[in-house]
Amino acid sequence: MTGRDEAEMAEADLSVRARIAYLGAKKPYRRVFDHHGWGHVHEKWTDMAQRGETAAMGNLVDDEMLHTFAVVAEPEHVASAIVERYAGLSDRASVMTPYATVQDLWDSIGAGIRAYRNGIPA
Image (cartoon, rainbow, N blue to C red; front, side, top):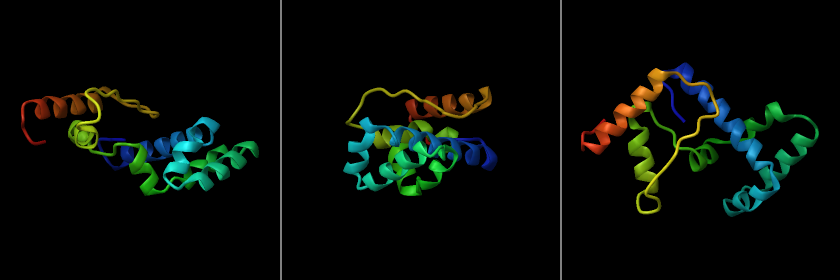
């Protein structure tokens, strides 16, 4: 989750929380949430989805849950945050943003990737 300023970060935050809740309400993800001790939240999301309360589901995603499932960093630090989290676990990553982005954001992320590859702290 990233953005170039507070407004973009706030938009990204809401969208990512909504995405986590949407997926978290799906039966195949129940075990993931149980693993983290959040099975009760899965049940709440399922009930909310059945009642058509999907817009409020993201409100149940607390900061701990957000940071467990999403890499949260400023654009120039996305690359180093991904490496820090997944070093030794994965040798590649892809990025998905469930929110609108602009080319300038991706340019900043790209600059951070290049800096990281060249050993330059962002």
